[in-house]
Amino acid sequence: MDPKEKRRHPRVTTNNLFSHRTIDEQGRYLSQGMGKALDVSQTGLKLETSYPIEGHRVSLMSAAMDDCLMEVVGKPLYCHQVDKDTYHTGIEFTGSKEEIKKFASELVRLHNHRKHGTFVRVAA
Image 1 (cartoon, rainbow, N blue to C red):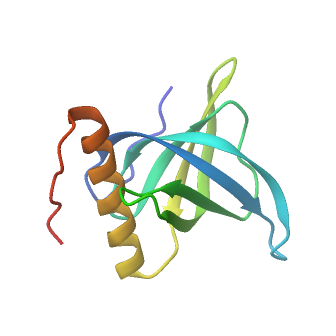
Image 2: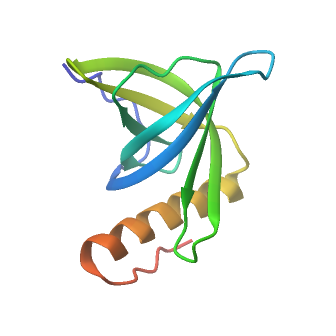
């Protein structure tokens, strides 16, 4: 069962791989792993992993179009098991508005380039 829709902003479907680290309230790293962003909005994304995401904050990292590292920090809002080996975690971005806008735009641009082989300009 999907969680009730609570986003204020539209979602854009993506399929981007991420490395992530979870962080506790004292700033200590709890775990790290890989996941796939299923969608992104102006305020967060849905991450799919093969294990539950636990922690106070999560740092997400991926390669951008220019092969530079892009990173964003967020807080997990929910984590639901969708089948035996799949979990969906809703993550709310916690950085500055400029950082979040740049990250979300690059994520959509990268997804469209990989999917269609084209560059898509995302309005700021």
